[in-house]
Image: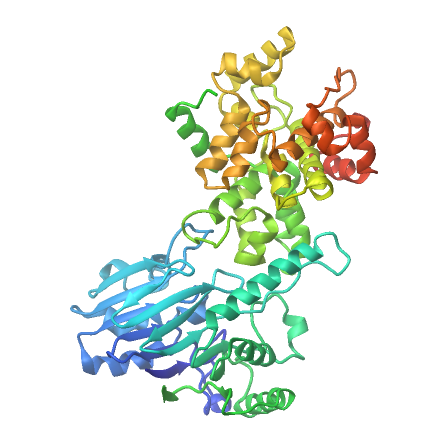
Length: 295
Length: 291
C-alpha cells in the first residue's frame, strides 16, 4: 500500500515562503492499494496537483472518500480535472447531513452553482456516482475494505480505515477527542462521562493495530483551551490516541495555517519531548506535502 | 386495542415535520444559537424539555443513515454522537418552523400539556433511579414521560374538531379522555403516540409503554410502572384551581413495588419543588397554578 500526502494544511490554503517545506495545500491524501485501486481521502486543494499526475493514466477510476464537508476538505473537488473528461469513473463517498437531509452529492451541487463556479454539476462529463456511507458499514473495493467511523467535529465527520491484504491506514479527517459538557458535580456529569468513555473506546477500537494513523493535530496543548469545541485535536491527543490503538506510525496533520515550517517543527519537537517514544513501537512524524510512504 | 388507519397514521407522521415547537424552546434556541460559544449543557437542557424538538431530533438520529450501535434515546447521546454544532443547527432548523400557538382550534391547553409532560418526564426518571431494580435506563423513562401524551398534541393540531368533541365528551360524561377518544376518533392518543415512536424506530419498550399506559397490560415493566406512577403524581401536582383531583388507588403490584399509595410515594420522593419550578418556567405557567 502506498500513501502520498498532497495537502496537509488545515482550514485555508497557506502558500508562501513560511510554509514551503511542509506545504500550503489543504487536505488530500492518495492511497494506492496492492491492486492499484485509487483511493483519495478528501478533496482539499491538494487534489489539484494530484489531478495533474492522473492525466497520464486516463481513463481513471477514482474512489474519493470525504471525511466531512468543510471547505478545506472539498474545495479542490471542482478542480479535480478528471471529472470533466468522458470515460473517467469517479465515486464520491460521504456522510448523510442531518441538516440538509442530503448526502455527498450536495458537496458538488453547492460548490458548482452558477454564482461560484463556471461549470454546473450537471455538465461534468465523467461518470460520477455519489454514495452515502454509514458508520461501521464497510465498503469493499477490489481487495480493499473501507470502514467509516463517526468522530467528533462541528459537522458530521467520518474517519476512514482502509484495510488491504493485511496492511491498514486510518485517517481521522478532523477530530477533537470527546469531552464532558458538564462540570464535575453537575447532575448529568457521570452519565455523560460514561458516554464519553464509551465513545472514546469505540474510536480506539476502530483504529486498533493500524500500520499508519493520520490524525488531526491542529493545536498545541497551550493553544487548545481557547479552541475547545472547535473540533480539532492536539499533538498530544494524537500521540495518546496512536498509543491507545497500537498504531505503528502516526502522521500529525491538519497543520495550522498560520504556523510556519520552523514553528511547526518547534511545537512538534516540544510535544515529542513530553511523550518519549520508542520508534520501533510507534514512529511519530509530521505529515509533509509530497511525502510518500510504502507500507 | 384499536389501531390507526393507514391513512391517519401517514397523516400524523408527515405532520410532525411541519409541527412547530414550544415558545420557550424556540426562543431559547434562537438566543443560544446566536452565541458561537453557546454552552452545550444549556442547549441540551432546552431541547430535552420540548417534546416536538426531542421527537424530531431522535427521529433523525435513529434513521437508517447512521445505524448507531444502539438506539439514541437522549439528547445528550445525540450530542456525543453528532457533536454540539450539528445538534444546535438541527434545533435551529426546528425553531424556524415557528411556534406552537397558545390557542388551537381544538381548545387544547398546550401550556398545561407541556407542564404535565415535563413533570411526568422528570418524575418517571426519578422513580426509575429510586425504584428501578433492573437495567431500565432512567433516561428512557424521561423520554417516555416527555412523549407519552404527544398523541394529544397531534390530535389537537391535525384533527381539532374530533379532538374537541372527544374532550367535551370526556368532560360531559365524566369518562377518561382516552375512552372518549376511542369512541369519537376511533383510537386514543396513546396509540397515536406509540405509532409515531414506533414508526421512527425508537426502541420497542418505549412504544409499548406509551401504547399500554392506560390498559395495565405491561404490569411487570419498570418503564411502564414508572411512567404510570409519574403520570398519576404529575396529574395530581399540576391540577389547576378548581380541577377535581381524584387520587386513584394504585394497583396492588405497583403499590407494593413503590412502597405504598400515591401520597406515600410522593413523600419518599422528597422535595419536588425544583422539578415543578423548572417545568413551570418552561411551560410559562404562573406559580399559582401549581400545588
